[in-house]
Image (cartoon, rainbow, N blue to C red; front, side):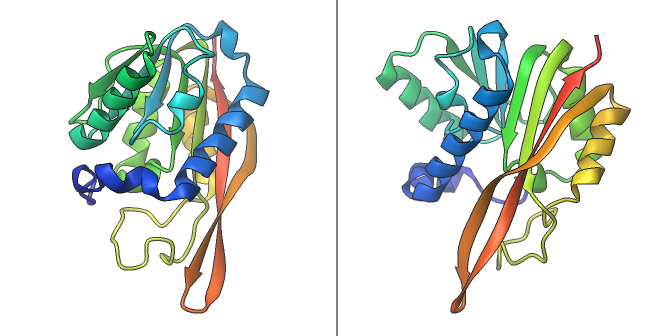
Length: 203
């Protein structure tokens, strides 16, 4: 990770499009997966918890995981304020996952991670048999989305992510455009599609 997310945590939710995007993605997940059957879910790279908090009342237990302690402090505060009983946070300094989950969701995280092959393998290994994974991130772009900020990846070709999932025992169920980021660059509005790839681990 290159960006300092700790320093951004306090103002992260002030960008309304992030809240809207998380809601749209959560609604798409609800339509595709029977969440009442999910015993344990993971919001990987959760940030301030915008995605997972939309699912918290629909699954039995959810873990919010991030490498930023500042982001997790924001999640902890929300959990406390809302009186949520079935959620916890976990700081993950090295990107490795030791637990297992029936559902893993991730929104706009992968392009911040250097070694995607290794990360998708870890996520796949953390899935229970028949478990679902929903990876949502930017389609490949020219670097305009982050503009002056450096990130390891300027989005992805969907086929590359799907191939990684399949090679790690996760069958791709669906690939779709779930949201379109819109940003003003100069005097023109640019669109940056976000894909959602849904996979299910072989039993």
